[in-house]
Amino acid sequence: MSSEAYDVVVIGSGPGGYVCAIRAAQLGLKTACVEKDNTLGGTCLNVGCIPSKALLSVSEKYEHAAHDFAGLGIDVGTPKIDLKRMMAHKDKVVAANTQGISFLFKKNKVDHLVGLGAIAGPNTVEITGKDGKKTVTAKNIVIATGSESTPLPGITVDEKQVVTSTGALSLPKVPATMAVIGGGVIGLEMGTVWQRLGTKVTVIEFMDRILPTMDMEISKEMKKILTKQGMEFKLATKVTKAETGKGKVTLTLEAAAGGNAEKMEVETVLLAIGRRAYTQGLGLDRAGVKVDNRGRVEIDDHFRTNVQNIYAIGDVVRGAMLAHKAEDEGVVVAEIIAGQSGHINYDAIPGVVYTFPEAASVGKTEEELKTQGIAYKAGKFPFMANGRARAMNATDGFVKILADAKTDRVLGCHIVGPEAGTLIAEVVSVIEFGGSAEDIARTCHAHPTLNEVVKEAALAVDGRPIHI
Ligand SMILES: Cc1cc2nc3c(=O)[nH]c(=O)nc-3n(C[C@H](O)[C@H](O)[C@H](O)COP(=O)(O)OP(=O)(O)OC[C@H]3O[C@@H](n4cnc5c(N)ncnc54)[C@H](O)[C@@H]3O)c2cc1C
Image (cartoon, rainbow, N blue to C red):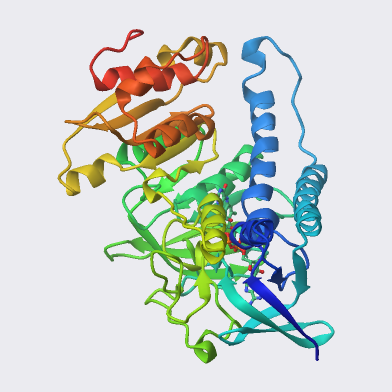
């Protein structure tokens, strides 16, 4: 049994954990990162953001080739999908990214400890790997163990016929039909991938709207656009049972409020009702670390748990379950441990849905502003009136900017449209700097770009858009 001493031991190598470890090492702290899986990078790099975007990107190209090219004067005949090669592309992208983290660990002198990490005491981490157990001491421990797919009573996941997002990233053939349980980001993104490849996709959502945490106008516009693309929606509906048979799954559905049961038969079911904090095997009880009523590690505003020198970040704590939120928390906690001060503006964390068109949001929704009694002005501008969007044949959607009625300070921005995830960055910066809609309106935007829609929406806040 060996026992090495570290300033910081991070448990989990997802975007929260690996970024925290690199930043701690940059600050001169002797750092190790413990990971139970074979590769580094966590959910995001292995079975989340990166592989899903690889499949979204390829399937989007296929969709355009199949349906849009002819109208633009490009004849390619009927394009065919080679699923094996498409999956090989995804696997190559994942491997390049996860190996990239190994390289960054070496470069920054972060020790990669392979095995399941458990907190054996306030300054001790026990690692159980293939070759047995080893213990290291740590002046500071950072829990970054992430999340897992939330189960649903009555539904047994086998990752073949009834899959989570992980199974949906590697289906061996294109199913004829798929029911997606949950109309959130992951359900819509993975549903979109398979729909583009030829699957008839039905999204079943408990709430009476899709994307329930986003601005209502975004939810409505996305439902309209996705319906046009062929996706079906059963809203205010719950799934109570899934029975797996040969080549089919029979779902039992009911109105969310209760009522007569209805059956639905599909080839594949994707369970995507959300994610929950993952702390199995971590030894939180033994260490006396408190969790909240949703199983998330409880922290204060400085990422400290109730046990001294144990911190937590990312999906395993409160807040948006997003890779960039986890990364930013990783940086800040490393800086706090190193004696610096750090801060995150949770009103300036963008969220993106990578369908086509994309949806992106930052800051307050109109519904939140109304509930909080904040007087605001809204400015909206459609992509239909933008020259570049027309040139690209991508005119669906709009940009909406919400600004304080008195001060004009930007409080939120909600976009459906081409490259929404990239366009939102401008408004994120403005919110971070405490800027106003007038600041955006007076900033020169290159022509012809999609960014001009953001500028016009800012002008619209003051009732003076030019191009509509
Ligand atoms: C299909 C899908 C698509 C997504 N797309 C996006 C997107 O486009 N953009 C975005 O921002 N977010 C996206 N997310 C969410 C994103 O993946 C997570 O928010 C992010 O990975 C959280 O980072 P994390 O570091 O907190 O945890 P994770 O990435 O979950 O990493 C935790 C790591 O800890 C390890 N671990 C757990 N317990 C132990 C232990 N006891 N010992 C050792 N190791 C342990 C796990 O094996 C894992 O590697 C997506 C998620 C999914 C599932």
